[in-house]
Length: 525
Image 1: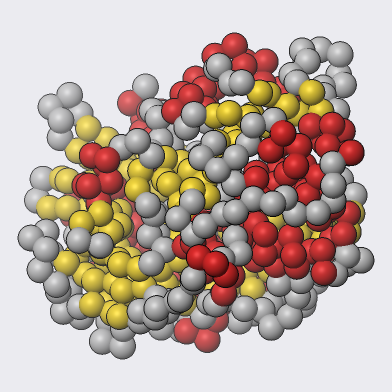
Image 2: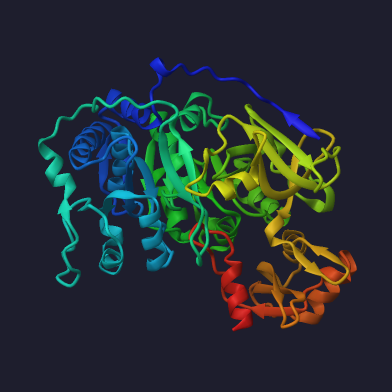
């Protein structure tokens, strides 16, 4: 089945205004509004933020940033990081984020692979710089603010914000076209060198023209997940639409709930494991949640049981989002649509957004009818330009304008899309195939299980076995025999976990997804 909601968007080169330029125009047009609130409570007005960003853009241009060059950010969730990203975009440079949680050698290889011309470091990441700098050869290294003040961390570089103080507080005269590089985003992972996903200015600019998800007024967006990932995209939309971005250094469920009440937050983004942490936090029942208009979630499998619980706790404010770095947003499930339950009790990921075609195909490329499970392929004007310097990998997933997402799913008769799993997460056992998310969703209905992650482990004969890591429900003690019987009765013997790992928490990757590589390593170590 192919769902087609494609709409053409005309964007002549002579009228092109890039996403960063559009955001800065919005900020400069309303200078007195509160634009950014730092993690320490410091407030920055839109006018001050815009002026500082324009000055920084001019300084970066003087330091070598230009169309076709790369500015790499070793930054956290700070106003300076937001400003640096926009400034680099105004200068025409492609932007690369070095993700927190990746090893220093991996960050060094990424820095080299993207041809970094300028490396910018903020106070949140000063501690990593002394390890990283000896491993890289970057022409210019600068700090976003005064350098380390602890007396222990070596000097990193000149304060580029201070150096930019004499620059003009106006947009730089740099012509940027829709085909120019915007950024290179790297896929998640804690080992190996992630693939670099090249995005262009034109496709990203379309995100601002017709936002699929709208709050109906200026949002107060809480960025409690990394700005380097989807949190940054949603912050961009909030600022461009006249809103405020409230920053937190990292995700802490208690701090998130406190910020929602204190700042009257209207919108925030979480991955399902983080939503589960909010639901399990003792402060949830005494927090004023009345300001919330949207809780955006996605990025990994969502448990129908926990989603129903979240609807009871937060009200009809949940918005499910299915997308990927290679394709941006693919489908959306609006609050009123959350009562739809598909095969096996699944919650759909919504219907394809305007401009996106989605096809469900068999392994031989045949389009499948509604109800039949297969590989998800998409086609749209915002699909990535390709993997950076990897034409082989690009050719493997981009064919005839279609992107192979690597996900498994199906459409129902009403055109709602359901996800089953990632192809690469498939566990091949004797007797069939096991999709971990199916088993996870079932186990989350067991009274002894609060959170869980299902993963495959190979033995010395290369046979795969189903393992499960479980965070026990309060006062409960999960037992393997009980969980095996529970799964066997409801799904069948081949789906039942063979090994149980009781853990205090499910480890997460830098982007907040269950870190099955770590779980697998711990199980085999």
